[in-house]
View 1 (cartoon, rainbow, N blue to C red):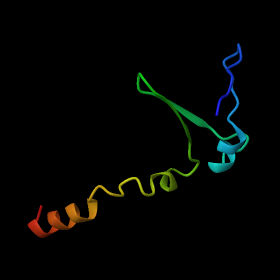
View 2 (view 1 turned 90 degrees about the vertical axis):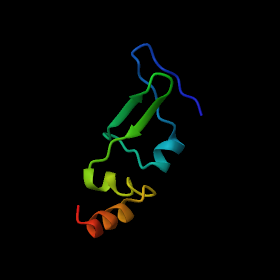
View 3 (view 1 turned 135 degrees about the horizontal axis):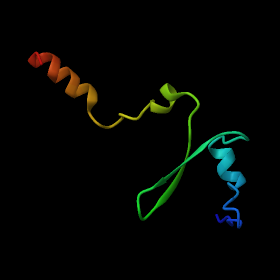
View 4 (view 1 turned 90 degrees about the horizontal axis):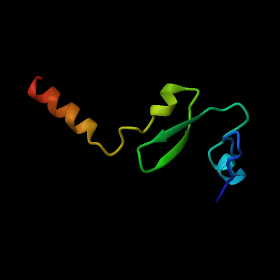
Length: 72
């Protein structure tokens, strides 16, 4: 998908992306620039909900249980 940037720096989020990510009028987007890639991420209105699943696959439960067993 493509979009065009206007001379005022504005662009349009394609409809399919808006629908897939439930982006609606008034929602905020965060622009993340790591120097080579720019990512646009919808900002969640509920910070707790936004973190859900952030630790998945990192073995956090196992580490917590090991620490508890060792008395740390």
